Length: 312
Ligand SMILES: [Zn+2]
Ligand SMILES: [Zn+2]
Image (tube, rainbow, N blue to C red):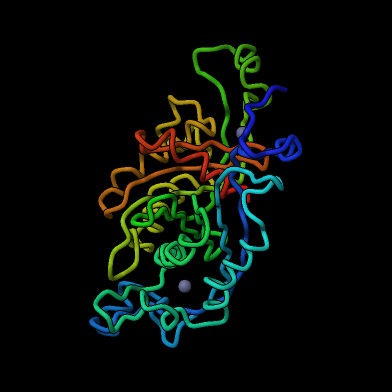
């Protein structure tokens, strides 16, 4: 295959992909504790804002960090030597944080300073970005606090994406009213069978926003969880979607249509919390999922990097 010669490179290094671009990811684990308790608030106020996260002396998580980096390959066929990546992550992140109380680790989380903020998932991801950016060609960071809660910082460390995962079980039938059973089966296959079938749906909701300088949050997490529960999980769980959810009496409840409807239900209430609904991902089975990007201007730019992080 003809390749544009790169000055100073040998045929051997070209064979190893020199000059071509790639995104690489590296995973790191650490365990740490934290406490959500602002000194300017009373005990009752902290409890009402941060719930059980405000209970002294704190509680802990096993964090999983995914670091995505991009760049051209060197003559050895690598974006970076993974040993250097591993050492940078260890030196800058896991050594200072592992088995520590996050509130005491870094000045960002010193709440006695006016600039101090709570060590939330998103604030921690942002702080890790500022530690790693001088050393690694970062394009994205994902930090899981739990399998059902994670934050992403992508390119712009001034804002973060926060995702929550929940689930519901529901039955549906894929068929268009105006078509015959035979026509519906030709389109939807077994999914058109007359009495329906069910799925355990996994629902990921991702919001985007600026990180509050004091609470360290892109939005109130319990408010977000409450909205998803009240507007989606409660009305959808253990239902026959076609009959029990009015929208699907006239709209075929494919995974795509369910995801779109969820995005429509959540967009305005999430906007009222100060964040923007970025993405709804609905996994219908281990084999299929639908993703709706609710912010159209970002439609083309975000998915590729998120995907690199998601499948790391
Ligand atoms: Zn926590
Ligand atoms: Zn189905």
